[in-house]
Length: 385
Ligand code: CAA
Image 1 (cartoon, rainbow, N blue to C red):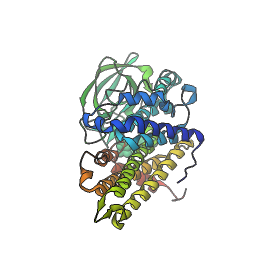
Image 2: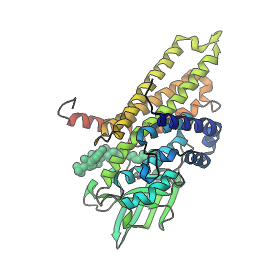
Image 3: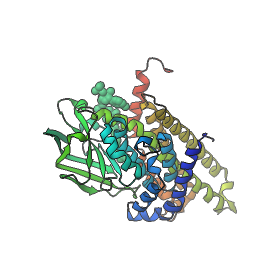
């Protein structure tokens, strides 16, 4: 398929592919095995200016938008979803500043994020507030010129490794979702520490940690948007970010399809390569069709975000759900094409299948997002508005 990329987008794609093939492929199994955070690769990504893609030019970015970010994410994920997630999550942590940050906050943080020397993260989930995000218990109480944060956040991607965190906390417990606010919290602020580092089924190169706030003083200037806007900041941030989760899944599935095709050509059974069997051919054909459909949907959703459209909740949710379900199926089928060896760690498809699962869960489970899509559909007066 030709997606009519601009010259700049083609350059970004080539650059990300080069890093994926030269720097990620050789070490992905080791990173997975050791659950090691890929700092050396993060530095390569930074040196290649790929962290600048999504940041506006006035803040030392490339101003290329979400579509270009998705292209880079997809290429990195083709080699390793865990490494690519570190990159995509840096964008997730940055979106609140881009959407709702003050000029001062943008001037202070965006050039550093663009340089890629410091990573960001997004802290919403708590042990009692997963899909039900508004059930969060972390509080932020105004005291003079500071807010004092207390509570903890669970399963935070880039947790412990990032320097800057957008944290959602309750400033007014009487107001429900309208009582939440968003804050920029820096690593090293007194009272901010890291708890348990999670051991995961997949995406093991990525760091997932608990964030703990104990009387953590955050300057009032670090409030993002206004008090009470935290839930909207959260929902809008996730609307922008979800196509990137789709891109993670498209890249992951592309890697699995390529591995399955190569193996089907070389593996001989019954006297000829298994690629001669129609059963295998049909599996590969379905994998390729579903993958391309997901890619087209992810690209369309990302381009809708970049178009300046006001509302893209439905597009983002559709891209995320469709692409992540597709990747789970395609990676599972890739293991099936490999047969017994596909289940072993000697081949990459076993890791790809493990990596795929979480994409159906984070940034809104696919069940919650189907509710979101249905709600959008049902509230429209006409189906073709
Ligand atoms: N844009 C703007 N406003 C929105 C919105 C959107 N997309 N979605 C909801 N809102 C507004 C509503 O209009 C409502 O506003 P009012 O109070 O003015 O009426 C307010 O937000 C509350 O909305 P709901 O009543 O729909 O809220 P709810 O409590 O019923 O929750 C939910 C709805 C969809 C289930 C929500 O909680 C949700 O999205 N849950 C999933 C959470 C999630 O995605 N977590 C991911 C964590 S981050 C992560 O995973 C990162 C990682 O590791 C990589």
